[in-house]
Image 1 (tube, rainbow, N blue to C red):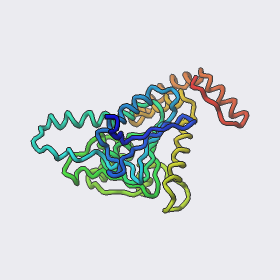
Image 2: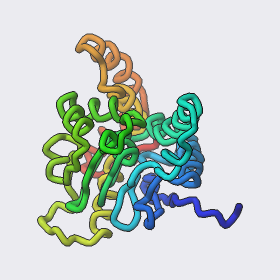
Image 3: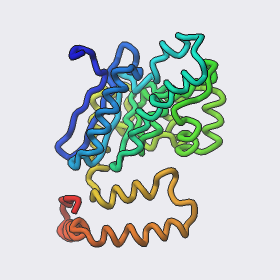
Image 4: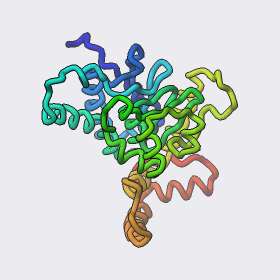
Length: 273
């Protein structure tokens, strides 16, 4: 229906950053059915848009995402394992489709990221936080096995020891510990201000996404491929890949633009060619 809320806002900056805002504040931006459907459509559209050079994911009204809409999880006690699996797999794949984007992705976390919402943050390439951010994967405390790739994604981002700690205890960590454990890379805005307004964080996060979008598109996409799933298994594999990927970028117009910009002490104007 035309009046059904999508719970997702999509906007773009002039510098090529697409901003996906989860917008279901009364449920702390839980992944509703309409949000999930809108997410799939939005990610597919971004994947085919040559003007998009980075994607930022954030949440509205002081939360990142409270995870899946739990109303149906225990709503049908007679559902079989196969029926539940048939429901969960498409949900996982819908939200993790952001991993398939060739451009850099940034999770801007200004509030709680919980369960599947935490998994979405982990699925992005980079995570930045405000002082209000928190992170938890409390599946076992709800009597359920972790889902949406958290047993892989948390280990990939922060290592096995951290994954064991957070998945087995379900404890919530705040922004400072997210930084210490490597789940996030930076706190924004930089100044020590617990009461910094949400728009200050949002502006700083957009600026960080724009810095990711400013790289040469071909070089950036190939670099993202090189780092997928933790990167090459060995140094020899990394060198073999780089010996192909680096010459590819050396044959682009963007290389000459980047060198010229360095000589002329100006920002480069990359075209992706």
